[in-house]
Length: 539
Image (cartoon, rainbow, N blue to C red; front, side):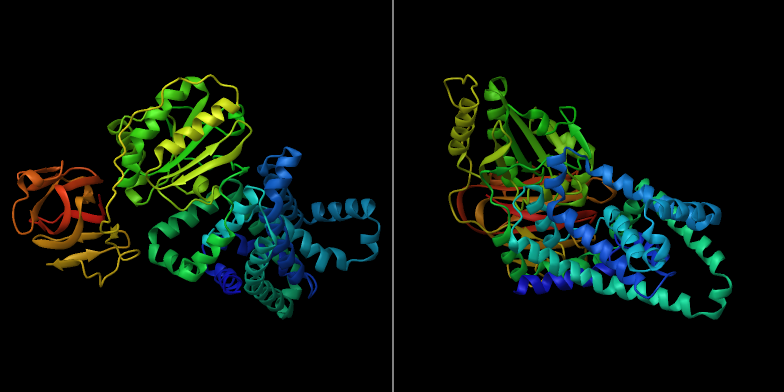
């Protein structure tokens, strides 16, 4: 029950999200003129059509072989027609005459055009083009739809969200209708006001057709990240996350969603799972500063080299954890550094991540020749099991297999270590007892930035320590490293030379490499500042 309450609250606050703002002028223009029931028609048209698309749109498109953009462009065409009809009275009159000939009953019932049903048609067109901000709740609903696993729980969750969206939307539409219909001067200039609203509809349709609305929404959220976090705070509660896990798509024996919303591709032209039918496909979610992913990469590359000629296709989906990981140049450099030769897709907007309802780095989804997910693995380890699943599916598809399996050493840690530790305000804990800051630090959502002379002390249990570091403005900086108060010497990590690490690019740096697992204290000193610390990981 608590999940549905949070879904309802999430829908309520959607009115404050930038992604809904572009349709508000359309809602106002469609509701301001006409009868009292028109705002209700507009509101229901939006939420019903949006809900139907979210729930069963993927299934309908698959069954009919349609591209989702077909309906989007149809809706834009309807909006353009509405705008032109309001802007040019002669065209509006001609359109009414045409409609009355096709549907004679409308000629006798003017309220069907200006009242509820006229508003519903307008709202339905808006619902076809509206893409709300997908927080965890809505992302789960969309993932259920994309994999054709929608259930009663999914419908109830979507309904709660839709009711939450409808309430402020209806209030906004009704307020506009009341204000404009009760103003005395409005009655004298009804024609002119309708023309203004027609122009507004045309401008909004143009912005949506050219994706300007999405660019503005993304830019606003990027410029004001704290506001974006506030919007998603309701859905970030532990109780919500646990409930969503229970609703999530079963991760095996289901239809695999498509690789979607990719910014760019490396090592390959764009690929689709639909075009790879007959092949066995391994989709590997990773990000280049994740130490768990890095330890997995040699195994994934080994499978690719061993089985690429036997019918295996591997797609590495790089979904960034930090902002700088969205930079294609950084990802390209990491691909070269780790010797990755299989196709890599840059999933900066989490489109494919959400389609798979994924929550982990690394994560492997093994898809058979018919397009079904047959095996999954989250995190490190169990490489033999994954390889045996690859071989079984290749054999099932009729491909000839090499006799030998791969022989890559498993470096998954087998002892309990300090957990991954984030330093920014969004996921970090300011009262974390294992970290002590000295000097002046600026705290951001993702990182902490050192001023000259600032220091950080960390108590850890591990044999290896890694830290994601970003040089400010791309300028190289030096960080001094001390282990238990002394120069680490032979226990230095690969990136530490003579007790210091030279930070030249944003990536994962290895600071400590001990011979034995143990409890120690690491101190980092930033003589000149100029560095941003993101997260510690351990091995």
